Amino acid sequence: MSLASLRITTTARTSVHPIGRQIQAALDAQVVTDGLLLVSVPHTTCAVTLNEPESGLLDDLARSLERLVPWHDDYAHNRGSEDNAAAHVRAALLGHQLLVPVVNGRLEIGVWQDVLLVECDGPRTRTVELRLI
Image 1 (cartoon, rainbow, N blue to C red):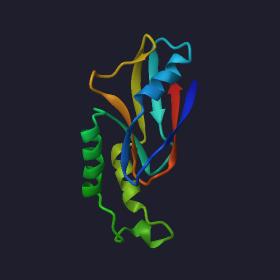
Image 2: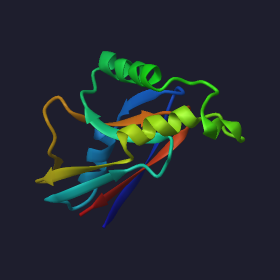
Image 3: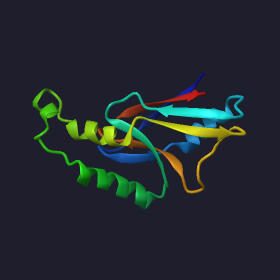
Image 4: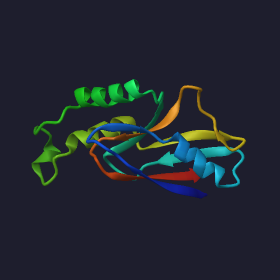
């Protein structure tokens, strides 16, 4: 069942944003007890993952993506009207969806984990779709 759509505004070309609080607020607004929550971004240059939301680590993740898949003009995709092939590759490596257990209406994730939206071609306003299974 469709639970909610979140709108997240990102701030840089490559950035990482904790969104667990917004997701939990969407769960709290519904009568949800147990199930699986599909967290999905319908974008080809954006991703979601689970990790620690500590600010230094968020910066490290963004910088590591930039080093792993740097921006340059060599990509075949960049020969057309787009110049964002690196963003597509980065998002493909991370993935566009997560399946997270919900128990007693709460995200069942580790103490140090949060759902992270990874912007690979910002700044933009992104949609995060939440579906309860």
